[in-house]
Image (cartoon, rainbow, N blue to C red; front, side, top):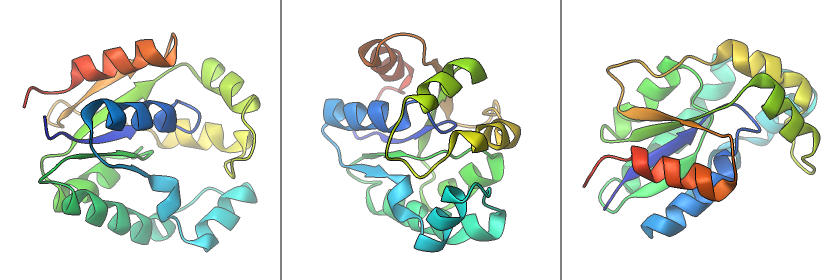
Length: 165
């Protein structure tokens, strides 16, 4: 399978954990969207200020380029991709991308964020992420996966959502 997948969701939903495991399972490269943020964006989020679309534009462009570069052989990127317009931007360069939305309750995700260390995204911004989140539309290639359970259970549900090659 040469899947091109974006593992999406709010901060703390398990994008990195699931994305890394999925890439390993599929034997494709993995990228962390956080690594594509310019330092200015990281500083803004670390200060508790949500990004606006002008902040996100170069970040999304860089992720879209990575996806396009890996379209032939597959790849997995963990990226919030919270809004339809952001997912549309990624699809412009990588039309075959499949989105896996890791979904959980605000309470569960807040609990996970509270236990996380060493990440620039403060738990205080979780509310703004849920406010920004737009569910996948019926015309978007993708699926929703519950984050309840172990990482292995979430990975198994994720793999089950992927289209057949």
